[in-house]
Every structure is written in structure tokens, then in C-alpha cells.
Amino acid sequence: MIDDLTSSIINLQSSFQIMASSTYRLAFEQPIHALEERIARLDATEPKTPELHDQVRALRRELADTIRRVYSNL
Image: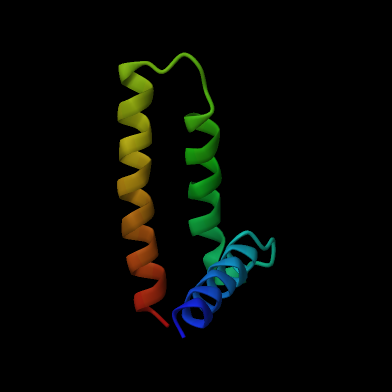
């Protein structure tokens, strides 16, 4: 019983990861993906400076606001 439940959870997580990493994007989600890409590029930047940290933090706030705005209009 527990093994079946654990297996189901693992399969569900795997399916979600595949869906989340999918390149299929809806047009209305474009602003969200653009911000996510900017954040990813900045996160990969070296060296990590305080200014870079502040910029990423501001973009993450903007991303949260954008997600709220986009999905509240559905």
C-alpha cells in the first residue's frame, strides 16, 4: 500500500517536472517566461555582486506581481 502510494507520488512528480520543463508556452504567459529567463541569466552571472543580488530580487518581485496579474485576468 505505502509502496504503491510512494510510486504514484514519484510518477506524479516526474510528470510535473516534464510539464514544467516543457517549451510549450501560452501567449498570455510570455511576460512571465521573459522575466524567468532574465532572472536565470542574472543568476548565472559571475561574480555575484550586491548590485546583481538587488537586481535579481527586484526582478523576482516583479515576476510575482506579473504572475498574480496575468492569472487573475483569466
